[in-house]
Image (cartoon, rainbow, N blue to C red; front, side):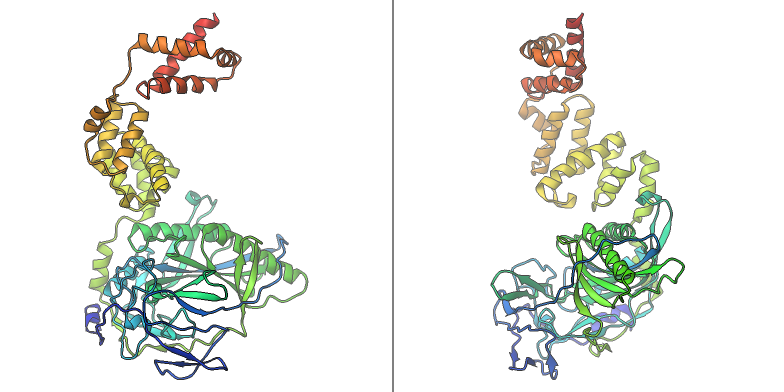
Length: 558
């Protein structure tokens, strides 16, 4: 089957609908599903009921056991083996197998249709955009799109998965191979290629919300069925710092090629880490692996790995055995805790999904997708430093912001690139942070920014006035820089006699500060400049004020 034949997959068209799944719970915890898939059993004390209208749904509380505190023991005899699994939400407008919107943060249980809810008679229809985004990701990682890919059912019962199984790609993923390279530019004294094992498409689960009603957990099904890619690395990482850097570079790459916004705070990228320790001289895979689940920031990833490494070394040093387990991380206590032992791990009973035919992808289609990829971050990073003479910190900052490199290059055409870079990374990014916006969300245009820079370079306005002009632009003012300059009456105060009189008056009013400056307290200079800028309402050049202050104080000291 070719990729174009995706449209021909057998399906039922459905309209977005609030969930109406009915689930009966017997006294023994046995579930009788409206889908009549047969008997399924609870793995915990969860009980779920779905109401036939939009809104948050209640289910019973789930409890998990916890482990004891971990030790901070460490030893030069031990080394660490780390592998990562990243779950990344795609930028597709619709879900992976339905026409429902992928906006998971809308009002609860509004973006869901019958296929997402697992209602009888509904069938999945593959979203071609998700296939293309997954292909972009594996090509951006220097991997290979597989000529044949198919979907599997991963069976488990939990209230955040209304189908009773997750559709994933266990056996024939869409991508294999590729790597992320770590090196001196990332703060390491060596170069390492961290290999990618595979990249697969899969469904996201629903969102569980805790703490709203005592004794209950709420379930929002908007996220159920949203398209994810799971990226599995080989166990090539050795330290928490390498793992954190790998995730950061993956974020940069996927944002850069338009696959995901990779916002960890909102769950667009989630990380599971496999950790084991081994003694020097032994095989790096000889240790017992423990999986750390749902790590949601770079700081948490580093903390969880270090805590788990210390726990495993401590156990082995005491003659105890490290059990293969799934664990969580308590950031406050800086320790990992038991979530599930190997014996309690569910049997997922993978089978090929009978409702989704296999997809055969041609080389021509792969080449077409490859041709749409932008310059990759590593090449962009090197080019910006060489072509424009920018410092690495500014380059990294701009590469990590979608659309910023293009904005910079258009603005730097015919202008000082270092000044342009400085204004973007300090002033523009400062305003974006204050407004909690991305560059692509703000109304500031390249033309407006260039007008500002040109007015500043021609001494038509001061730096303080330019910053106010930037605020006007980022607030959505569509007028030109010259119109705003005229409206505010912004002019450069450059009458030397007037400035001399003003500075002299300030020095007379602050004799203690003058005395301090004469004693070597050079920071007092900033005090005088600040006072003068207040008096002139930002219309004087700071460098002119600084020069006059020095001249007048030197004259008084003689």
